Length: 50
Image (tube, rainbow, N blue to C red; front, side, top):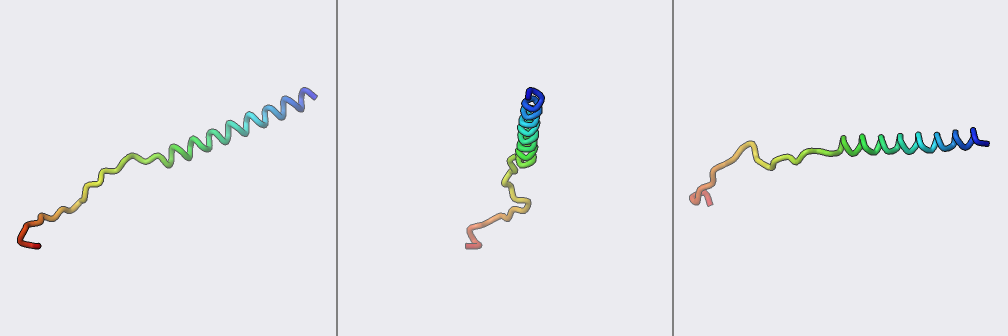
């Protein structure tokens, strides 16, 4: 009985570790740095155009 309990606990621990690692990897892949919102092309606006 103790071997069965040890096997079950090992299975639960391995499953928890695998799920935690998978969630950690997904969180790292989805973490994107903030991108600056600066346009590549700018146009000068004058009052005469309006």
